[in-house]
Image 1: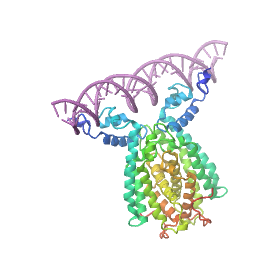
Image 2: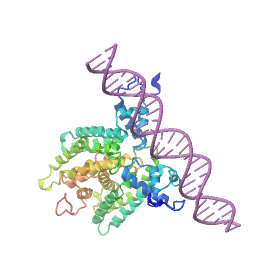
Image 3: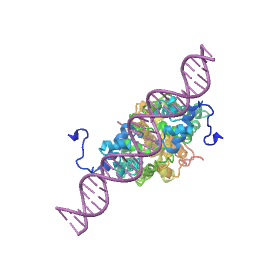
Image 4: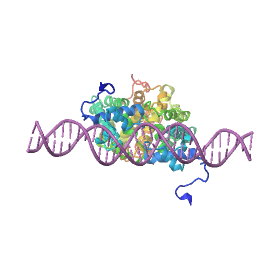
Length: 228
Length: 228
DNA sequence: GTCTTCATGTAAACGGCTATTACATTAAAG
DNA sequence: CTTTAATGTAATAGCCGTTTACATGAAGAC
């Protein structure tokens, strides 16, 4: 029973699906060992191939991480887009769904999220590929969903009170990202606060939208606890 | 002339200040090569000592990074505290100074900031030390400054309208962090938006505070452009 | 002053990782 | 069936992290 040691001791000399398996292995290993400590060799072991095999599919280690980021942005954008659903049934409810989708992605794919948003600093040599992914069409598409949502919300305001769209989109994005980023970290002080990311985001957005003038006079004024 | 190759070919066998120099070298290298790609050996070279020397001062590579994080949190907390200055002259002006101080730290010490907030994912083996730093007293002190500011702002509200302090503090923190984090990245989509981090934070906070009910009826209603 | 001691640095070595090169295997096209 | 290109392996070189045994010298004991 060759399959005992590995899930799939491949039958043929050729793997058949190595690229995808390597990406999956990378995400798994990054979740376990952190964005540091991820090693191409270990991913290869996990996939059951030699340490040199990955180089047939990725130019180097960073190219693999860049692909993790790029594909992550694609799923991210798709998910945000589905949640926003063109503002249906109402912009506000869709906006809430959007926020939840954002946090859900960060929670379900922490490795992808980390590589997408928290890789490297400055013009790091060797991370250009990843940084390119962070500026890829997929990344822009994700941001565009946020911008659409911002636009729909602003459309409820009289024209002379509308702040620049990009600014509102940035506010939404930075708050969502800040929450996702702080809560992903195990040891973070954020974890010591007895609040779920969703609670923080929803209450924060309620206050922000009220400040924007978008909310129709909140009834209960229970700004804190949300509804759940 | 031995001194040509290095700034300071130390005269004595003993370095005299190796620990600090290594921390400084680490910050420099992380800025240049990213949080990945930082190597203890290179830091040692930069300090002009053998690759084994750092182990006299740090248990391992992660311990050095943890110290970068810990000392970073200390300077961070001190700086935020000085900027907040107990809400003097007014809570609002002090709050604005606090936000600027937050972003200034992230801009001036991007390496520290990255190690403090963007290291690793989940319960990564090998990063426990850094995660411990992220939950250290210094980190809590920094958060406490934000919480004090939140408290001072909330104190301007009638008691029955005050949201939980920790919640407001988290809103402030997550938005500041989100902006700092997104703008630190070179390739980020955030860099394509023609807005400075300060503009985004200040305008966002204006809207948020208005939603909170803290702002005394904004006069100009130029929600976007701030004053600068 | 000399001796001892301990902190601090070095040299050498091991194993793991990245990446390259030459070679092996096989699927697919002609 | 033969050829070819894609895909994987083996072997190798260089770097890094880390450990161990040894070297140096500053500070105090005498």
